[in-house]
Length: 455
Ligand code: SF4
Image: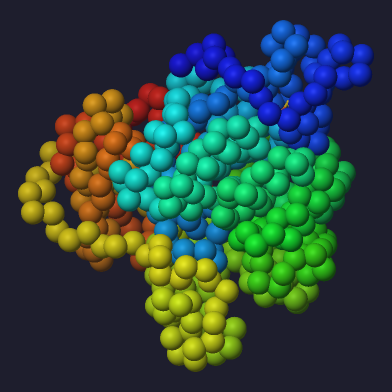
């Protein structure tokens, strides 16, 4: 779609004293624009003296993911979420993992779909998804759509999640705190010089914004992408830990997340040994809950009871089990309350064998050292309900998935160290594609607009 053709008046702007330019007050960049000019994010601009948003409702394909995909480990473990991501960004990270949509000059219009706020709610409800996630490239520049849809989501009894680098002014953030339940914040580093050079932002406004959330009752988790050669020597991890200890509640977790080469930054993927070293450093600094992201290693993303060490939540890839918690979030072994909110509300209900399941197409994917997640992708303009039988090999465990109301994409990942292959049987004529992704990234390593079928 040509998303540039429609726009609507934006929130948070004023005209300068001379009356010659509009100043945008949404993010700390405060772009000043004359008629016909766009701001740095390239999705907000001056239309004849009024400031407009051009990306209202414009998103990449909505995707069913798991709450842990968003670096959220202490809220509804294992919950299925509906992820939407807009276009444009108020920052420009040299290693951006979603640069195909965050940096407008690289945008392929075929990746852009339009949703109304009500359509997003209907999509979640039709697929029995309890959490709507604003994610991928940053939701800050999608402010109007996020606010309006989140209000509807709250009215419909849904939970809202905001995954962001949080380069935002405090007034719009206060509006978000009213309607967002979970904030998962990507704190890039603790070095303002790196923020300016590699992220095209500044550190202090991000810290101020995180503190504002911390002062509210909203759920907060912090993640930090550990980028090879940028923030991986331990200095930054220690600064982050000390700042968190001073400013945030002790139960706020820190996710240290492995990066992969992307956009302009081509240094190698983060080594597991590096993450383990940083993990030890921040634990020594007093951070109580530290998780490693994009890592398929035993016990690096599990949650244990602080009192008796009982395994409370077990995670591998995007498979999550809650063996050690009761419905009140207490340790089953010693009854100590945990920090996990809504402990059992997100546990996937296993579908029973469907009575009339008849496979029309079969696909498979073999995991390798590089690829441990895939998108299951369907182009489904007729919105036909789709049933998929998923078998994990060699274990042979079977799970049934259903996609309704035109939901086109689900992310799946390797669920145990010895799992070698996924086998998918679909009871629909709509062609199904398995698209490999790096580190649960939003874009597969194969261009989905060409929909080449894998296997
Ligand atoms: S939101 Fe966009 S237009 Fe507004 S100040 Fe930030 S980058 Fe500039």
